[in-house]
Length: 492
Image (cartoon, rainbow, N blue to C red; front, side, top):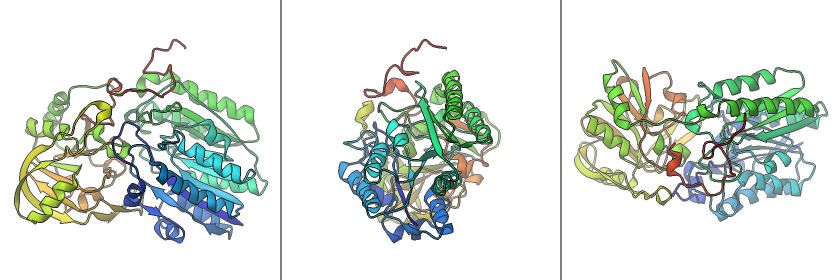
């Protein structure tokens, strides 16, 4: 047996000004050929689960590509065609099965449905090829995705700590189909609901109940997989929003029944999928009044893990103005500031403009640096390994990095975008976050993977940036209408 195993992932924020070219994939991790197996075999990523399944069957493993980039703007056409071409060429070379680790929210300059287009091309090459697909919980599911694979599943956790397990689950379904033990059929649909990622944490309602419904469904006889997708609202495409897909062993009526139950529940809970804002000063007053710590402060509108620039200084400036002390910040993207701190050297006093390097035309904001002074405490190459539970074993490269100590605040400054979902963002820089009063993170929900057992209190700071949860700031032009909450929809 010859099995193609590949990863091609990007969560595209169409409001983001950050260019997504091949170099951006290389910065996070782009591997071709046998290098894929060296990079991912010992991790807990979906592609690692796929390779384990292939080895169990004694199959020849073909790994044309494993590429992922931090969320950002639409993928450049040449980068998309490069990646899709590698996968399609491997399939064209002949194989018995394809096991694909995708995201589900990739938008390219020339293709709105990146995953659907890839799968359509693969299916054109090999019409009868068994294809397994693993998607992110934030997948914007499309007819092309479902129609051009054998079985598809999504993560059931946010933060995504079950990636390996769900890939193993759907991989086994497709391999069982190859052996004639099951006959996978899929039923899918979507709700007219554009929910926000800040309201999709699977430890919280309403997502917790949806996931519980999926898990219960999977205990039923004949149900092979059930997924409720939260979708990714920051991709302004017709297919954005909540959806569901159910895989059964030949029983389409059962699949339809479970799908409808998931979609009805998502619609019934629609109001809970929309974030409610409050003034940033009010949140900081609550943080100051809270006894003990650490307190986590989430600068969610500038979360690079959803495509933000990671250099908006609104929340940091507000924390400084509020007079909070013993604050650690992870992290500000500013390669220019890092270069200046490297030139000054560890221990040097320095005054510089921090952040604000990027304009954000989609929300009508220009970059606004913040003048700060402090001491250069740490300089590193920004490289470390994730210890989990999310992206366990993956090697991170934040680029040349530094810590600026202002007295009241220690700020980690990086040269490559990276969301702080693991303690390594701080510990690799000599900071132990559990011993500080306040931890300010440019994150939304993923921080819970590495920091979840630390805070006595976690508060959202409603700053600014292209990952805002304020729909009034975003100019939607392509998403299907009507859709809640952008439109008033009169239905039960």
